[in-house]
Length: 150
Image (cartoon, rainbow, N blue to C red; front, side, top):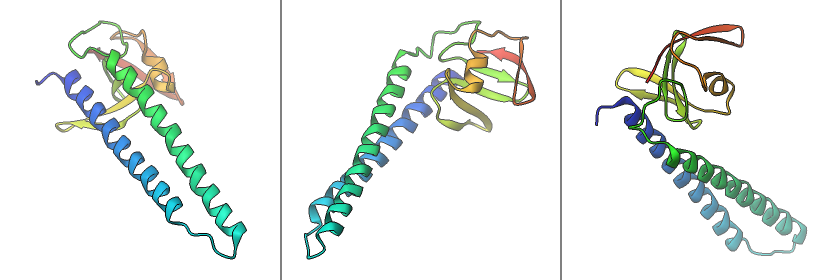
């Protein structure tokens, strides 16, 4: 398995699993804190504390939902399928960095080569979709030349 697309795909899957584990731990911690909180004479303080914990749980459940949406996007990518035009699953080499068009997972490294995993909805991702080698685009006053789509 030395195909760059497969390696980046696996790094994205691992990124999502790690984030999910972190978020589930935060939720469990907040639930445990809520269960362990005992009511004392400061009733308002107790209710405020429980409300803050509940908001934290809800915020992290929303994050989990976003992760599941990202996983759905990854599930649709077939790393072995290559297209000459940049689309989900493409690796795009430019004069200003290399991109993996999949999900927003940030900077990933394969060997010594850095890649930025971006979603098609991100500013740079939306510029990449549909482009082929030799095409250019500008983003934030910076010109990008697509050198290769793999």
